[in-house]
Length: 318
Image (cartoon, rainbow, N blue to C red):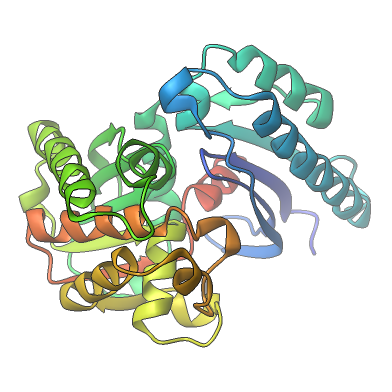
């Protein structure tokens, strides 16, 4: 590693998971090299849609994962011989919505020594766009892109070619839709699914008010719901980021996977080789969101990216 290369640490704390990226970023446009990439399902947003508060148990799970990340950041910082790694902690939908987010902020400051940024949906969208699109040029996809980041509490929609032209965040996410509509039943009933569809479609109509989605030529899908759907569509025996990253999944495949997940029992979903244990309960809702996006906006395929807001946070540090 040269003196000019920057080692940075990015932490993304969402509604369902908390993730870490420690990366070396070369000067200019030299690229980003992973040193450490981790993800823990902590369900920080559990119950927030109903109570408006982060529960003590959810905060404890999140802080436990973060303490492990702080140890990794310290260890990898010592390797450079250049002192502490520049670190940025970003929190998104669940923390934006919580009345007691000060408890979350205090815990993060205690663990990392930096104040977490509870960013707006628009800021989240811009970071996701940067992380997802910096390396798409090699595929030569048609522009502009519609980048869709399906999170636990919200979904971000970003339209642009090299920069963001329009963005919107709406409160549909895999955890939120599960807790609102699909929480009872194994599998959920047709009426529950119908209610979720109506909620999602209403949000997609609001997106159209500010984002000209019909101008997009390539749909780019981000985050765990999308990558898991890709892994199932590709019939992978286990989760393989190298196979999933930049895969192209058709609308028919997405619809078939979504139908399969919504009609499966919890045990059947858990038995899928690509399924992370923390996504078993919410993957049906996440897949349904992607399916409705492709149907309502008329996309025949989605390009799946393993790089997202986490990479955007890292790039923002140099």
